[in-house]
Each structure stands twice: as C-alpha cells, then as structure tokens.
Length: 335
Image 1 (cartoon, rainbow, N blue to C red):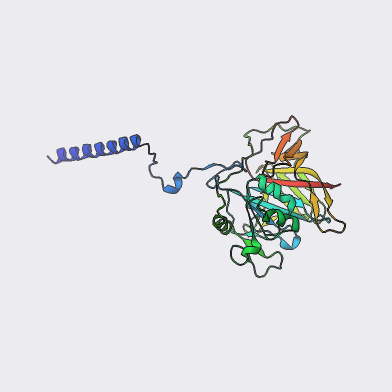
Image 2 (image 1 turned 90 degrees about the vertical axis):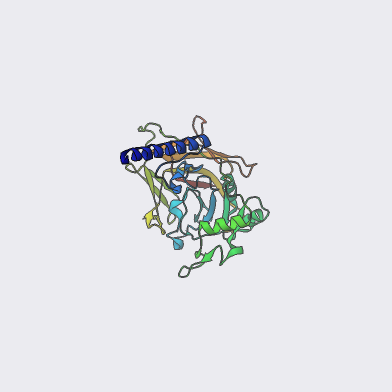
C-alpha cells in the first residue's frame, strides 16, 4: 500500500508540473530554470560602440573634459563609448568630449567648458551635453536651447562638485548618476538614442598598402600617439610620450577605432585665445582599425544641427566600424 501511495504522489507531482508548463506556454511567458532576474535582462547592441550592454537603450551623455597636462590623469576617459578630441587654442591645446552609453564610470573629470565647435557633434550623437560654463558663443547657443544640456555652473556643489587637492580650474567633477538625475529633473528624454554607426564582423584583408600600426597627431606637449596591439586588436594611447591613464582604473586608455577628421581652423579675432574649427561640411578622413588604414571622407550636414557625422570609404560606402570604443581625432590645418 505504501508503494502505491508513493506512485500516486509521484504521478500527481508530474501532473502538476506538466500543468504548470502548459499554463506558462499558453500565457506567453518565458522563463529559464535556475535564472535570476538579473540574468534575464536583455542585452542589445549599443548604437555607438556596437557592443551588447544593459545600457544600450540609454541616451548618450556627452561631457566636456580637460586636456591640459595639469589635469592628467583624467577620470572616466578610458571607458567612454566615444571620445572627440579637438584643438581649441592657437598653441594647440586640445579638449575632449567624452560620450557615455554602455559603461558608467564612478567619477568623471576634470570637467571643463563648452566650445562652440563641439555643439554640432554633441547634437549629432543625440546627447545630453554636460559642461562647466563655456565660451561666449557656445553659451549663447546652449542658453537658446538648441540642444539638451546641463551647465555645471548652475549646480556647483550639488550635481557637480569641486575636489580638494586638485588645482582650479581642473577640480570640477561629477558622475553619470548625478548627471542623469538632473537630466530627469529637466524632463529630458533618457532613452532618445543616436541613430548609430554600422559595425562589421569582418574587415578588409591586410596588405602592404593598408597596414598601419601607429597613428601620430598634434605637436608637443600635446602630441598623441596610438599604437596597435595585434594580440588585443586595440590601439593604446600616449600623450607627450607617456601612457594616457584613466585615474579610475589606473589602466592605459585603449580604443578599437581611431577616426581622423581632417579639417580647417582659424583664429576668430586677432589675439583671441580661441580658434574656430570646421566640424560641419565635409573633408578627408582616415580610419584606423584592425591594424589597417582606410582612406575616405567625413560628412555632416551644416544646415541640420542634429545631423549624423558620417564616415565614407573611397567608394562612397559608409565605413563599418569594428565593435568597440571609438576615438575621433579632429586634425585641423590653419586657413
């Protein structure tokens, strides 16, 4: 009798499990045995880097950062999905615009002022543009609400803060959680995404004409070099002959793609400390990835602020990037 009861209990248990499975199937619900809620988070390719990540649907956040030797090492520069570097003074000092989507660095800084020539690029990536003040022309545009932006001068000591032990004006910092909090307060969309760059699984074959393992830009002490490492398929960054380090991680900055935008620049007024760099229109470009160099062009519609920045090969096709971080180096000549 005991054996019979056990059989009945066993059969009953099977019936219950089968019934549960049928109910789940008919209800359209999916589940994974032994999974936790975090395991079930759907990861999708990010629009910029083309990497699967939990924040792929998060709106990109662009943050202006210093390039001055006194500000090094920078915090958060090594985990940006995309970085734009551009000379901003007649003596060749550059400035960064770091764009974050997939990763969330614990701290970002030194945060610096907005520059007018960065605004079309920030708008083209559909970012929320974070900056610490700005030169007159840039602030006039941003104050007229040409794009969603957050000025740290209005939130000094709350959303943005000054770090002790760091000399001003390089002591301004924040993090993505704080910036996103303020963006939400402003009712900015946090899911408005950049249309994206195409990415390729297979690159053109290497040959004598396209192999390029080193990229050199700018003049000392702002000179930049990118060195390709075949074992990692990444380019490592140095400035002034020293490795570029992310202070958060103490690791050298690397990238999968180096895109060089050749353009022009001029001084707006005689004796002015600022230069004007052409960041809309078109010009020649070189794309470095997978240890090869692709020659082509860049284009951005000057009549549409939020138009995408495109990169085309010599055949006129949009260049497909290796999935991973992108550095855009703007390389102007004097006009």
